[in-house]
Figure 1 (cartoon, rainbow, N blue to C red):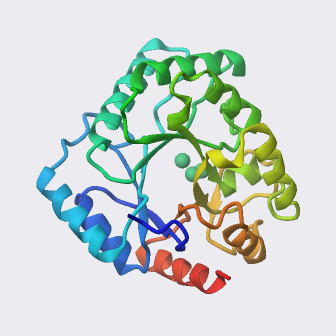
Figure 2 (tube, protein in one colour):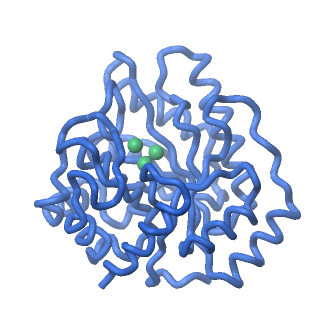
Amino acid sequence: MSDHHTFRIGCHLSSSKGFLAMAKQADAIGGNTFQFFTRNPRGGKAKELNLKDIEAYKTYCEEHDIGRVLAHAPYTINACAKDEHIRTFAREAMADDLRRLEHIPECCYNFHPGSHVGQGAETGIEKIVEILNEIMWKDQKTTVLLETMAGKGSEVGRTFEELKAIMDRVELSDKLGVCFDTCHVFDGGYDIVDHLEEVLEEFDRVIGLDRLRAVHLNDSKNPIGSHKDRHECIGAGYLSMEGICRIINHPALRDLPFYLETPNELPGYAREIQLLKDARR
Ligand code: FE
Ligand code: FE
Ligand code: ZN
């Protein structure tokens, strides 16, 4: 059982050495959660899980209070592509990821809704819904998260309305949630620096704050509404340390797990985690 009132903070880690290695790494840099890619973004078959590693991982997590981990689908999948071969890869990769993730306790599975590549957002939404309805099943333990997007190119999921439209049409909608990427939301045009309260009210009105499951905590290299999706280190971008402080302490967000996807190596992540712990009220 994990305490949902502790400050859950971690960063994106490489999964190449397995789950126990990630948990130890998270702990070593002062974190108590982490995010990882489910497979190589450049495609290919995913590694089969090593069940011995998973057993050791579970024990380690219990002993060191590591929890609420986040699996990230490869960012190269596109469930709403025009090309059916690309959609087939998305469907198969996501179905296979979900099957493997059943072994990981307290796990959410985050994916980018995709790019409609000129077909229009409505067609994009339909195609994403179709794939989700094909790959999700009634008794799955993993919650699937739609990530809020920056609106780069023809990305679907920049607006809360688009995410809502997807969620409404998925049959097992109760197994869906949202991952709030602070760089993307800001880059997508929502002013979470000077109007955090209003943006969260809007999110609540359109989707419902109860749907939030995770926060990607990133600063942004670009000003609001740039649609460029360039992450910056905490406090070094347009969100600023003050803006980020308000985010991690906001009553609607503070009990969610926070995952850093900032341009850092492990020592940089360790410094940011400490900085954020110091900023918690
Ligand atoms: Fe992402
Ligand atoms: Fe993200
Ligand atoms: Zn991004």
